[in-house]
Image (cartoon, rainbow, N blue to C red):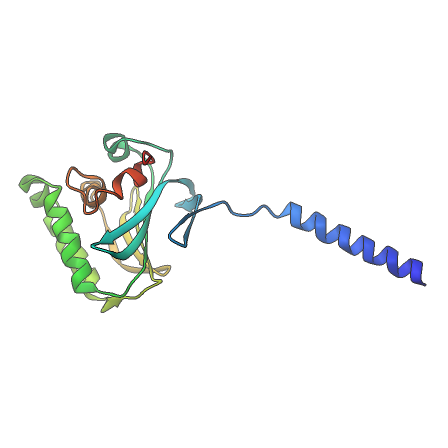
Length: 199
């Protein structure tokens, strides 16, 4: 009986060991305790984490941000020219009113777009503002995703739930990306992390 019990225990241990090896762990990149999966799927396509970093203001951690692309790129021009879906994933690290987030968003858009570029995407910018007006505030731990899907547009998600309708113009999504990747990024220390060029 003892031998049989020992054999069963050995078989069970072997089975558990085999199972643990057959379930690959999801690779992730950590930023200030926030984990970003190295790969995500959007519109049936696998996207790679191009880079991730921290947005700080004075001494405060505001949010961690990850940029997902169909293939890794290290220049802004290459990223803006990419075909296929893309994702910006923002994880809040402190509470923020949607008004404050919206104001920072608009300031970043204005600083990194010409007057003509802003005029072109004005209708979508206004609709984006209406979408944000539906959210009273962003809480610590909230995950805001800004997805670009060809043929559909820019879709916002908060904690996995879609907010508003897609905004169809790629120029708008690229204007959004320039908030963090433009010549006057909202956080100059974050930009190289997103490009994967941080030392």
